Length: 148
Image 1: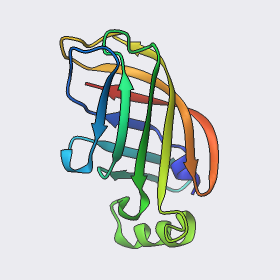
Image 2 (image 1 turned 90 degrees about the vertical axis):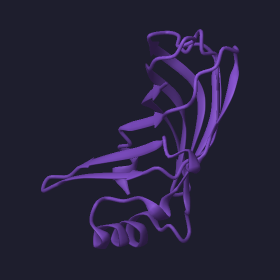
Image 3 (image 1 turned 180 degrees about the horizontal axis):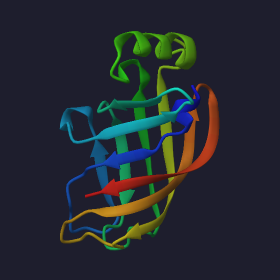
Image 4 (image 1 turned 45 degrees about the vertical axis):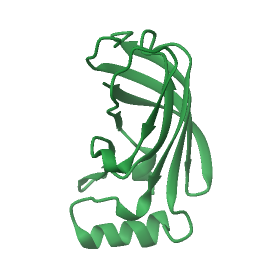
């Protein structure tokens, strides 16, 4: 579904740490993670969300625009657009979740961050480059994110 390719926001809320090159685990049970997509169609705007996210992210909290890596996995079976019938159609007709059950985001670089570091806490707006694997196709994208 083209709506997922228009993935607008990736929010990873992870605890702060004092170590450089810290590896964080992203778990569904944390209930602090959000994946959201926005589809701007001529007749309606669709926003889909899920907090079911797993993976890991390695980043230097003193230099968020420096090297980083990670893999985020999002199961598609629980994406919620606010309407159960639309959810069902999206999963069966567009995403084909029985054949392609998840989206995988492989982080290759943290391009920019404002502020550039969050060693003592806080939140940074980031631009993250990586490869998005969706519906059997992998493409390079840059996604806006929030790290805190």
